[in-house]
Image 1: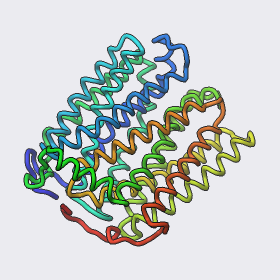
Image 2: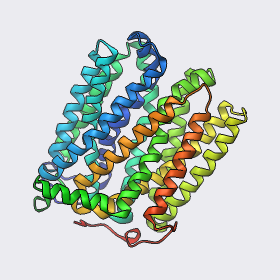
Image 3: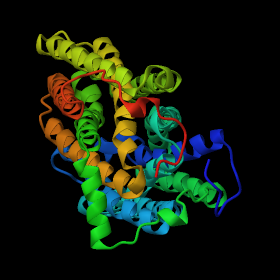
Length: 414
């Protein structure tokens, strides 16, 4: 691990948990409020119930746009001050969301909330500062396992809060959670960007970094593959409350079933962390993508034939989420591997593309909701097929191709 600057030394386990905790603040701000979307729409007098999805979309737009700013700042000023500043703004934005007195004001503060939450994407840069190749994929997978405790627990937490307090307290709890993470990072997070690797923010340096990120085949096309895959998940998150309420008429089951699907994602991420150093990122992620396409195709057929039931939806969605986890965690590591010399702007630019792309794809699929699960399943299938095209472009038409980064080890590959 890098020389520690600005905090007391800590070990591998604490690093993984802290990194996951910082990243989980992004998911917390979405998943905890899913049970409250219908309530917010009703209380704030929103005419169209589908417009409740805008609360998720506004946040995702901010999340995508903000990553460009925070990544640049982290390459210039270091990872630690950017993460601390972003988490502090996150706490303030969460409180202002809770105080919003109209739907439009809430959407504005949700945009700011997303802009602030984008800062924790710098955590990927911290990981890239310290690891490369299969070791980086393993760390990202372990981080993802811890991170997924939030979507497992957050919807139930949101529903519990609604039982004892108004919906606004969900935002207050998000702010309190982030403030605890901020304090932990303040006391324990080291600076991982060595001073000699800090980039001056001149147009030529920025343009050079952008050319590296967008000009590298692996970086660009795996980022686009992540974007469309994430789009299917954003659509699922935006539609899941309506699906359980309007398709299955079992709205109360949404938090537990959502947690079950997230659990399968966590199990897949843990499996990846155990296997990736032995089997390689490409074998695992390419196989998982093909499974994703096959399962979503089956889901489309079942839903289109009118045979969808609650148990088929949960089973197929769980397998879909597990396949997503196995593919995307490795896509992210492969996209970051060639851009270690500009890891801050690399992570931010990749995050901007993948998040904004995912928000757009998710919004398009979400607007197609028609009282059935067909739009979700068909949208996921389309995302899987588009991702396969991008993977083939990244790999010059060959899946499962061995690559030197698949055998790379621990190090500071700057």
